[in-house]
Amino acid sequence: MLDAKSAASLLGVKTQTLYAYVSRGLIRTAMRPGTQASLYHREDIEALRQNRRGSTPSADSADRALRWGASTQVVQTAITVIDPAGPRYRGKLAVELASTRRPFEDCVELMWTGALPRHSLVWQPPPQPSAFDLLVPTLAGLTQRCTTRQLFALVAQAHGAFCGRNPENAIGAPALAGRQIIQVMATAMGLLGARPQFDLGREPESVAALLARSMRLPESAEVVRLLDAALILSADHELAPSTYAARVAASAGGDLFACVVSALGTFEGPLTGFACDEAERLLRQVDSVKAYVQSLWELAERKEGVPGYNHPLYDGIDPRAAHLLTLAQGVASMPPRARLVLDCIEAGRAKMQMAPSLAVGLVALAAALDMPVGAPGGIMAVGRAAGWIAHALEQRLAGYLVRPRTKYIGLLE
Image (cartoon, rainbow, N blue to C red):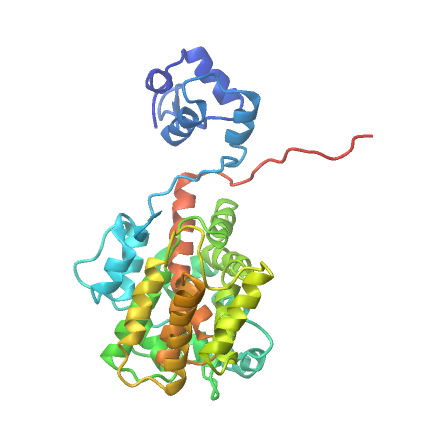
């Protein structure tokens, strides 16, 4: 917060102009404790400086910057930035974090608190209400009818409902609620297999170990390491549509359960999480490298976009995908089908100049570890929940309603 003199000086305007900006909703104020003077939000002043570029704001720039909500197209964040090497969480390169053998929980702490912990935390398992067991057969029956994101939304809402009308308050702290949401989503992966199960466990275990147990994978150190890497690389990707949805929900006062469910709904689109399912489907349905390349060619010819390839933020291969493909290649005892998947991806790169994105990397790792159908998209969502929650918490601190304005272009009577 800044006083009037400092705020005006930073903007390079007179105090009267500063007051005009306040009256137009461009700068938020708060009363200085114990006085009648106002303080001014530095964040708004910095945003206004950037929009002004040294000139008096026009009506259009005022419309863009109006904070009856944040109608600017750029949201300030200290969580994630993307460069050619991939996303950086609080300044730390995600690929490097995934290479350090740190658990996913360390990445979560970094994103939520701004610092890597000296000693890794193992989260306590949340209580599993006995009545929740009655829902498991119904939820398991839905796995063939819905995507993993829809399944996660149902499970998260059900778990929240058992906690109370305001589950975040009932749990006791935002961090604890966030952990439980991630644990519940990871546990729901057990509903995807041939023998559905939903067991939150009774002893502390890492999220990666919980995923391995839920999907009935070998609970070896190597499998846990690979799952940790996949979760870390999935944790955030700047202001993706689903992340923006989480921030909108948070700005309106929604609790973390509401924020994550809102994000899951947005993550369902063909340009976001659903692309992971489509990339998996393409690689599962072909029986040869030639057939796969032909499928890619047909999609490219129809100009429909090829799911899982050519992410617009990267000139070549997505660095996250490159890391996951390397990890998948190193799995010692992969099933024969996994080798075909890896050969298909390599052929797509060599013959079609297709650049794999995170989705294809997750599909490759899932094939190498023989995960159930739907697992790649599920892992992406479990990991991304950490980023959604980080952005929701940051939006709360920002203290404004994300409510863009419209420019009406219809008819007037």
